[in-house]
Length: 440
Picture 1 (cartoon, rainbow, N blue to C red):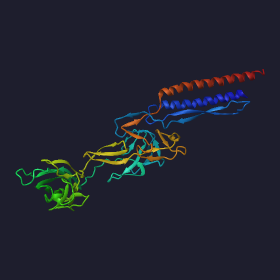
Picture 2 (picture 1 turned 45 degrees about the vertical axis):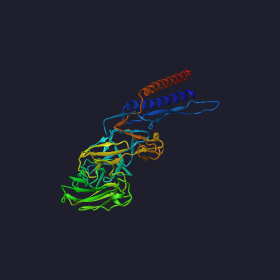
Picture 3 (picture 1 turned 120 degrees about the horizontal axis):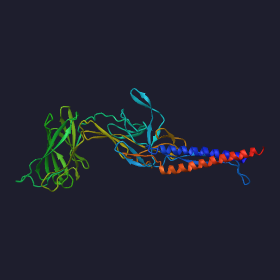
Picture 4 (picture 1 turned 180 degrees about the vertical axis):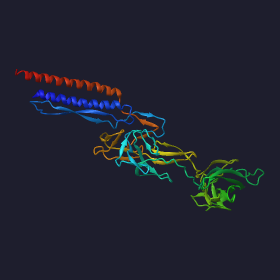
C-alpha cells in the first residue's frame, strides 16, 4: 500500500537527514581543530518496485563523503617544530600504549595525520596536540646520513656534542708575485693564524709564515706554540713551470719540496692536491692534520698571481669544540636538526610524507588521525617534494578544511528537508486514520 510506503520512505528521509545533521554538527564543532578533515553527506536512493507501469515508494540512506584530500588553510606559528603539508602527503605517527623501563611503548598499527602542531614532550619525542608521536627516518650520528630502511618515532637527545679533533685544514690565498727576492723591497715573512682542536676539544693556534726565496719560490714555516715541538717544520712551495719543472700554468703550485721537521708531502703528481701532512702533539698524543693548498696546477687554493700584498681568501678546519644542546628545528626538506651553542648543527632524522592512491578511503581515528584500508591503497613513504608528496611549510600548521558558511547553508537545507519529511509522516498518518474511520 502506497500510504505505508510513503510513511516508510519519509521515515528513511528523517534518518538520512539526521545523519547529515550529525555530520554537519561534527564539522562545525571541529572548524578550529588542527588538521581536521570534514565529512560531507551523499544520499543514496533504494528502490522497492519501479517499472513502466508502477513505482512504489523506496527509501533513502545517507552515506559519508570524506574530504581527506582537501587542503585546509595553512597558518604561520612561532614554533620551530610546527609543520604543515602543502600537497597530498600525510605524516606517519605512532600511538602510545604504555611505558616500559621508563620509555613509551607503541601500538604496532601505523597512523597518519595532517595535524602538524608538533612539540617536544618530556622524553624528548616529537608529538602533536593529540599525543601522537611523529615518525621519521633516523640519521647516522657520526656521518649524518639518513637511512630510509625504517621509520620510527623521532626522539631528540639533549646531550653534549662530543668534540672532534681537527684532521683537515684548507688554505685559499694569493701570494704576491712582486717584488722579486733580492731587491731592496724584498717581502718580509707573511703570516696567517688558524685555531685547530685537539681530541679534547681544546683550541690551539697554528701559524703559517711565508718567506719569499726567489721568483716563484716560497718557503712556508708552520709553528704551533702549544705543541710539544712548537716549530712544526718547513716546506718549499714552487709556482709555475719554470721554477717547479712541472707542466703547470703560471701562478699555480707546481711542486712541494725540501720539507723538514714534522712535515711530509708526496710531492707533485698531475691532478692531485698539494697537501702537507703535519704531525703535532698537544698533550693527547700525536695528531695528524692534512693542510690542503689546492690542486697542482689549479687556480683554487694557494696561488701566486700579480700583486704586492698577501690576499687570504679562506682558511678553514674541520675540528669541533664540545657543544651543549641549544634547540631543535625542522627544515623545509624534512630534516630535523639539533642546534648546539658552539654553532654546530646535526641532522638527527628526516620526516617523510606518506601518500595513498585514495586518501578519501582512509579510516578515521581519534585525534585527527587515519589508518590505511584496502580501498585507500598501500602507504608509500616519499621524501618531501617528490612523487607528488607535497612540500613542507615549517613553523606553520594546517587548519580544518571546514567552511562555516557552507556548513550553515547545509544546516538550513537539512533542517527544511527534515521538516518536510515530518510533514509527509503526519500527513500519511492522517490519511491512514481516515481510511480506518471509513469502517465506522
